[in-house]
Length: 383
Image (tube, rainbow, N blue to C red):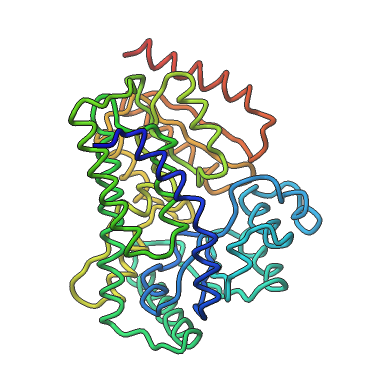
């Protein structure tokens, strides 16, 4: 039986192979579809025989190049996305036949206009409400048009049966990740917050999806067995939920929480419970099911964003958190406005709350360490 640390080490080693996989797939004649957002319906791409790749947007290396075209006071995620495309420093972008954009915010929408000069971009227009019949109808029409576009791109019309098979496969992945997150509901969780995030990232960048899902399911079983047999790692500090903007480029926040003795047990962010916590219905019309699932994502573009607030209430209880850290990337106005509502939800539950605004640079690491260290200490004192 392997230890938890051995399973994590294997994941980190395997994570290096994603670029080779997509290169080989492309060289064999495959179609590669790049994306940045969880609103991109993976099931439609997979059903066509193409692969979906998550594009580089999580570090500041390419931001100076982006700022030659984009304003400096723009969200770092947008600048990183465009900068890597502009510099050619994202290998996944290099192999893409098309990039799928989405109207999550005005900054991204305008950035995609510029990206059209580098790579073909297909835009999905999103509703900004989720509770009206016309919102469902709008998104379903957009996804139907996308289905037609991808079928023409691959030369393979997408059947309902193919969609159902893709839905079932992606739901297996979501269930496996749920089982992994479920280990964080226990005292002394099996994995750190960084490790949980790394497993999720791994699944976004490995493209033999059936093999990857089988591997993930086996990893979860091994981790659970090791934990049940006494492989404990001393993760007993204050339990913290992280919410807000996509966390991938701001993992320094997670690192600071855990360096101070806290334990990140749940992500409500994109890539966490916000998208993967909800399955696609495997019965009935597959396009209806896909539309309903993605419309439920509690993104801050939705107004009102009831799904996010409801999810926070549920997740705080499920993961028994002592406090919530709300991460806003600089110039992300929709998430910045929602900090007031999130604060009210968290504090009304009697839990600690801290709002953090940051970017992708290392310039605020010491400040974050001080603030998050004090927050964790406060949670410890209150317990």
